[in-house]
Length: 439
Image 1 (tube, rainbow, N blue to C red):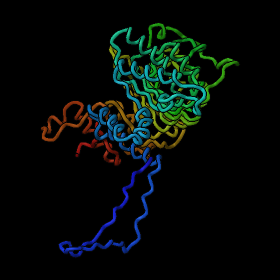
Image 2: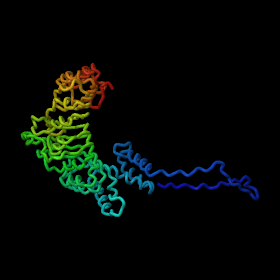
Image 3: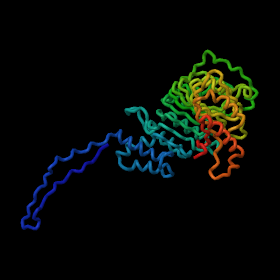
Image 4: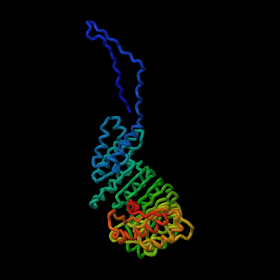
């Protein structure tokens, strides 16, 4: 980036300016002149502008309604700053509406049509600058909007070879065409984060396009998928889950560390993940389904297969009407020996620990305290020497100033009882806001 330097002007001294013939003397500097400042490299300017753009992100200090205009205003400072800031403007894109996505698609398509093979870089700009595409806040009002969104994603996917993060609204059901375009595009292995994918619960385990997408994304680090819940057919269907056939090719996901699978008792993607090695998996969020109520469920087997190295297990049921809850496995502490954070769901299971003498669990979360689960917890406390926090996710402490009778009534009274019991073992009882009740 160039820098314009002003040339110093000479200074003349006039000791007798009112004389008939005044004389002038040139002022000579006693010290050598300062060398001109070296211009900052473009990499440093890019870092400065990247920090400036971070202030106008949705989660930044100035992420208000005027943030897009302020981000665009940085491009108007000078031509040099425009050249350095334009790639940063396209790096992280958040699409709020379908009209904005249509404009982005048209811009990428026009730039790609004007790109030729003579250029040094084979990928067109600004498509090659995009790293994050977030359309999670985009709402679909009709089936026509869903069709247009599917068409836009199908067009964009082949023009963003370096896209590493894709976040989609879970209400959007992906078509086979869009999934195939993401899997077959050049640079599919650059995808690191894939969130908001909605799949259909199915008893079929073969010929699924999303499995082929996972097979192409070998550098995936975070995956968030959701299903369609439990169908009546799943409740009565009993499928003999045998080992995969000889021609089955396991997925190669050596970097997958975070996995979220909600409302999905069985699907081809879950089956492929179950029978594939996941050595880096540490955090798992799952909707539990027991094998007795849903015979075709794969969730219990998934926990027992990949729970050896888990450090965080979050059992979560999506709140929808009607909400169906199923029992969780009672052997979670045995199948997950390295677990440090365990979040349970109703109905609370009667946890057991029979394999090891002690467990490394540090944080235990429950929806709300119950007297029945307190008996189970007290029986396990001698084997949980590292447990320091028990959290009630759905309950808050009453604010200060409430009467003592109100603090002892209902669930508040149960929390006070838990607090006294756990306090004897130096275990904190925290509420939904991670407060201890004494703040």
